[in-house]
Length: 359
Image 1 (cartoon, rainbow, N blue to C red):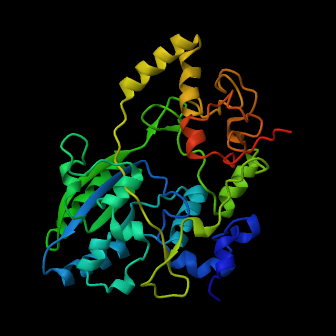
Image 2: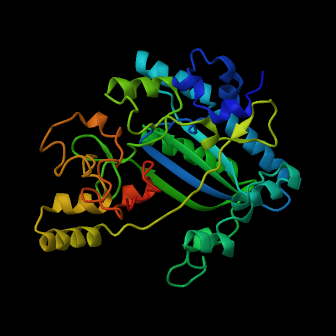
Image 3: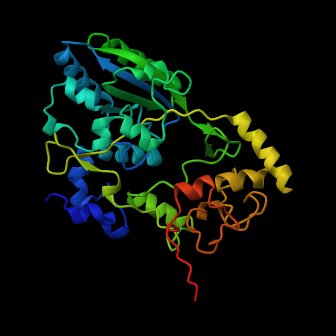
């Protein structure tokens, strides 16, 4: 039986999450859906290849896509099986691949308009003036603030490959690049790696712990969150499938779904941030750690500034793993976490429409 709109709009598994080992009505979805959508592949190293298929090479391009996806793209079910094997037996799941098409890619492959995903932002693309205005972007060809030249051309597809073994990853990427020569030009390549602090926590470039507040869809991740102290009483990080899934117009099953990917490359001025953080701390008469936390919304270790005025490792009141089950109901004036703090702006945790009574 196909998933219903109600199945997509409600928390999967009645709030318990999808169990890949006992998927029930979600079995067909897990078999068909690309991995790295319901949860991250978790590899440390990654390579991104931006493709423009060659004119009159449609058959060769289709053959390459089929070969690549069969070799590297894992379904959500395969990803879960590999993860379990790694946990229980230490078996490495190897290179993890994903394949994404732009609207121009669909058109190159001769899909009819009815078979191209219909959401307007996808069809318009980020070069569209309306989308640029909505995002607050400059013109993508602006000489000073525009995109890097490699991104200004027509991009048909994005290939991602990731692994914990950097040597194995690069070897597989080289093989993939060679196989692509007949059907596509690689107009740009990005190589990435996970940053970690001295505690082994994943961080972004400014040094703040990252990847804390991801939506949860799978039973194992929900159970882990509960074991670490989250009861979802203040902030529920569980999410319904319609948050990320859209029906695949070219799917072969009733439960064929996909998800949109937005690739944004942004520059972070780490030196400038550190200098502004130091100046703010001096002006307000506080530590640099607290000044940074007031700007971001969390301390470097992930401790929410709305809960404490110093990082957890300096004042271990609560286990770090419980630091996502919070809201701003006790901080309605923004006196602990400013309203303009990055995290509070990006995720107000329900604090979006308060009306104060004059009575």
